[in-house]
Image (cartoon, rainbow over the protein chains, first blue to last red):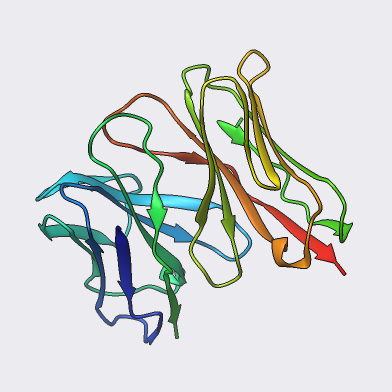
Length: 114
Length: 112
């Protein structure tokens, strides 16, 4: 069966520090991968998605970037965090074959910027 | 106007009640419809997945899609305190990107 791992679960960082969040998927090949941010009491905002290694699409211009160095690895980064980067970050995957496949989520990283 | 509208609630019901959660949408190209359940401090979990119009039942949960009205519903029968969570609807067009458009989510509390 397929599993998705995100770490760390909780992170507290000072303003201006760098960020690296990692997500890996097991049990599937060539998945579509997604990064979301969820503000408290609000819906999911799609940040980046990837349909293959090295292929990254950005949905919202901002202080973050994403990379996909391996088929089942997706990384969210920032060079200098802002207070507004606080939130709940979720990684998700879907099958890369066929249309309309549901997404499956990790348990997220709660990021607090001080 | 948002592509997907969902009343954020909160919705509070007594244990055993039938719960109805709804979303409306504006894009007639949506063909795939999903419901997710999200517990506090957890990622969303896929509950129901349907394609096109009609009903789908899974245990106490029934998903209903009415494409003519651009309206989807999730019914929960015999609601339990463990059903207390945020429920998100999501939908997509036929695309190889797999991008989903989510509703804002409805917070449900089932009181014992």
